[in-house]
Image (cartoon, rainbow, N blue to C red; front, top):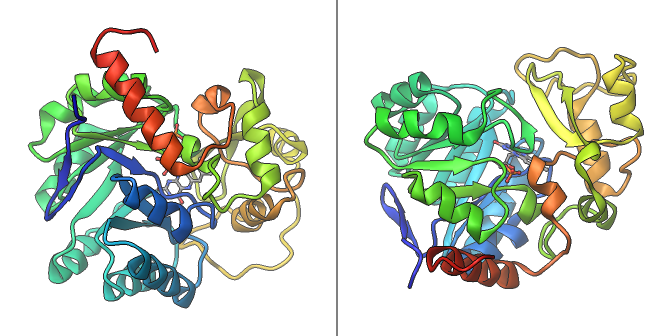
Length: 320
Ligand SMILES: Cc1cc2nc3c(=O)[nH]c(=O)nc-3n(C[C@H](O)[C@H](O)[C@H](O)COP(=O)(O)O)c2cc1C
């Protein structure tokens, strides 16, 4: 038995699995290429990168695979337009945008004949996205890692959103195994997006310290912090999150106005970069609730095989 394919606009992936974009520099081209080569959709996260850097990443991915590679840029980022347009110029297959809503991005993608996929948390925004020309929508539940646009669990909001639109709906948040994938597809989703599970793979560009924190995390380690982006963020407990939870914000060393609007309590990009490069004490390690089920750091190829086998066992009624 084969997993269903995932078609989004003019692209079709052999597996209905999107590797979620993970800033800053957690999902770079090596991870995205490996996922694309394994039959899923690999995604490079552009938020927090310079425009030239993202262009170089897309070029490297294009040179390495004919598989499907997308880019994820947060609408909240000041250089949103420049980043998306650079990715389109370099031949990206798909654009995913979260943390805000942009009407313009639909037009840029339409002109480039590239599917545009917004991340949504409600039927209202899903319907609006469909009207503007979205090729699909990603519904992200509160279980997800990173910035959160909803306080609702995925399975509570997914059915209503599937009913409200006729484009493919992709579920995200808390999906970590083939059994989880079966559950979300059974609910009517056309595919899944997974972040945390892919952050702890060999090809992820997270530091070893970051990946190790994932492997060791238990339920008490998963916290919600306030991000200057204006959204809550799900992360792993650290000396930094202990400070953030009591409103003791670290000073901003250098501000480059990277966000359109920023609470300026502390610098989110600086904290994410620190964790990505190995300083997990003063840095911020974003992670979803499923991190407690991440116990190893496999290659993407091994992980994808495992997910397909687990999905098959779940389909055939065998306990995974
Ligand atoms: C470390 C990390 C960084 C993330 N960065 C982004 C991002 O830059 N843009 C975005 O739209 N989502 C981001 N996300 C969310 C993922 O793309 C994905 O939707 C989410 O992780 C799904 O939930 P899961 O972690 O439970 O699989 C991030 C998630 C993690 C864990």
